[in-house]
Length: 507
Image (tube, rainbow, N blue to C red):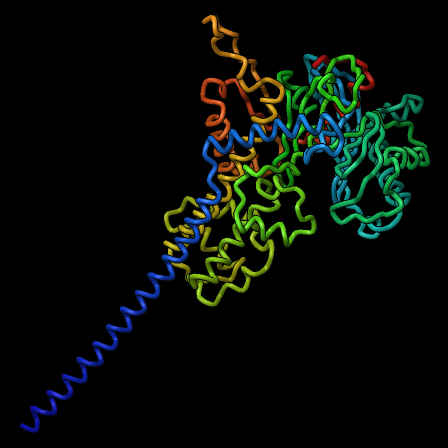
């Protein structure tokens, strides 16, 4: 009997231990399920906040048109600056000769020589040199900066242009792309409003930056003149129009974003009496600052704006540009980590602002491997989060998709807004009240430049899908988005050619 009692006690103890273990396992599974459910709920809430149904997109389109009208009516009347560029003629492929461009928009600048052969030859040759700007020149004096640029320009010209060396009396035309805020008062002059992108040269503010450059060029003895001052968006439009004269607008969708388009001069109310030979002028919208209550803003967007150095500015840009998309995704993932514990305690890297850059987010989003190994690699190498289950990795891809889809469809709404403003949205086509056809929609080309559109295929697909959703398939067939490469360089040289040749391309 004693032996039986011992065995009975052992069995009872084992059973009790098994029950405890089973209970612990069940409890762990319940907690795990709750954590997962909370993470899934956060993603679902985020998705609902980012929804862009066609009705909402059309409201954004209409709001864009209203703001465009307001910005053309008066300075300060709209979030959109609607700046005059004084570019009233665009290249058409007939330009001939050798022209230069200088592209200053960041910590590097580029010098280009573009040789144009006319209608049958188009661009015969393009030579480019890139030069980093020493750190001390970015915070020194305007004279030192532009002297350095002029010396580099002179060396480039002497190395590339034999005819220029032989015939120094021939003045070469230079297109100047200056991608900083400027108050332009002619096609070849503009006052610097402020520096950005790490530059801080105080004596240049409120100066005519073209005059600064030409003073430095003259010191070097270069027989060269700045024919046109533009930003990268206008250069992109010029390059697009050079190859296809149905190009009516240009959009930059990269680290930042902006748009410009061809407007009738009589629609620019804030400059009454403005006359051009072509009857049109390129307007620089500065659309990154566009805002309307119809934009689907989430708490993550609010937090991002509050943490930015330009609060309440560039609201549209913060939703659609490459500078910010990865950061929005990071903020969502951090919230998931804090409230659901799906990453355990290894999420300290997620607290670092902008650690998840948009190119990294795009790589995770476009990972088509069955086990999402690229997502796993980025989590481990960049965010130092290890052993993330496959279903969690799929949830991360879902976050990337939500961020990207909203951005692309809002960019599509912005583009359609421009088309609607200039009557290229198909609203004038169809059947009249008498039953007669009103005419076919015009073929419309929009030049697009920027890594987000060019290099991120899912973003591009969502943007194209958004345009079709808003316009309808029949009208959208007449709208062509065409990638334009190096508008900030080649486009500026083409505009210099237009100014010199005085060969007007009526728009």
